Length: 113
Picture (cartoon, rainbow, N blue to C red):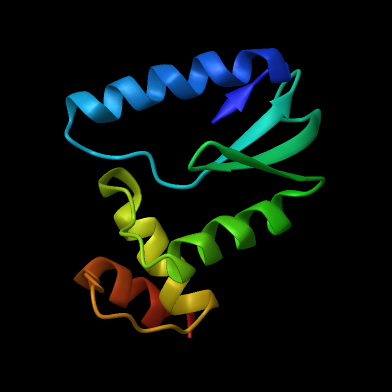
């Protein structure tokens, strides 16, 4: 998610939360980039359970978001399940009890190895 200024953060999260409620989904950890545009990011925030964790770079925010999912045994959002499964398998080499790896993700990992 991207917001121009931190003051827009709460409104944007609430709008997204309402979309998820309509789809019977819950808000999972999310990375929010704060800055004028995607080339001028001032801060990254990982938002989960009404807590905002602040980071100065994307990699740290990404790592935190991934680890929150695994420490709390959360399921990945449906919209990005394949992406997170790729990250989990390729970069972190982790197995979990609720893995749902598609053939496409496995083929991509095999092609990259």
